[in-house]
Image 1 (cartoon, rainbow, N blue to C red):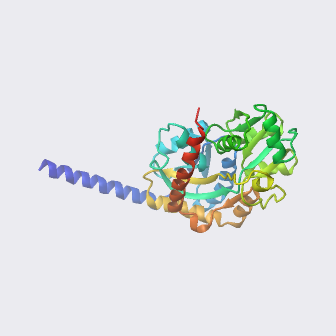
Image 2: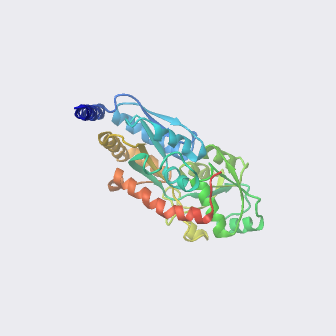
Image 3: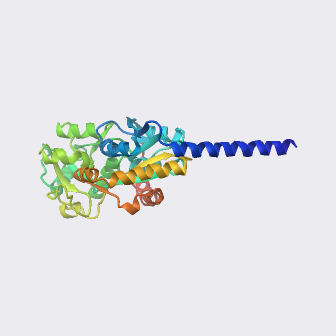
Length: 329
């Protein structure tokens, strides 16, 4: 009898929890949603998040509050989301190639990048990182830059946001491919690093067009190549790495929304619908294109596609990172 009573109470509790989750999903969102961006303000993912949140806020009818939580290449902010209540009111938006792929190959993380998150949607992909340098750099093209770096080992400085960041991984692979060496300078966010490139305090960056195109077009910094198969629509004068003398070296970050694991499927569906509607907006698309970004096709804006893409990227990049000996500090 005691066992029967226990089973009845357990079943009632489970049913009550399910009913509560359903009710919450039907009313979602009924208050502001916090979007954790795991870098400081002014970096590529922060810029993109603020473009996207304006339209999502209108669609939701609730504010989306961006909270910048930098540190440990994004793992501090992403860890906070992993531990958050799975009710849809705390989300992560990040350069997920770093936070949900690279970091797990380089750090011992207090969360699992696959099991502890519910995919919502991929937003954009970079059309390829730009190799940029301070105006004082004597090289005028990529071949000259590589020659100068070989002739001056360890002299140049590279800015990035820490081990495991896309810029750090690109810089490490670039050195292996070209037989060059330079010193790393770590920043809390890429916005600070690019200001130091403009000011001549550091020499180089591998970075997203979303924050580099403005200074390049203003003549404040040099751009040697875009590490993609095609030139940027927004800056067609910049050659590809293939054209400039570094064939086959392609790098691109990708950006996505994530929720904590066990977030209700109905809530994920509402979040995904908001993303899809946002990316279909003409003004949003125009602004993201101006930033040198590529919106993922409509059929790839699903949680299932994001999950599959993440796993494919892990299979691609973990062996490369480990073989190159790239480690977190």
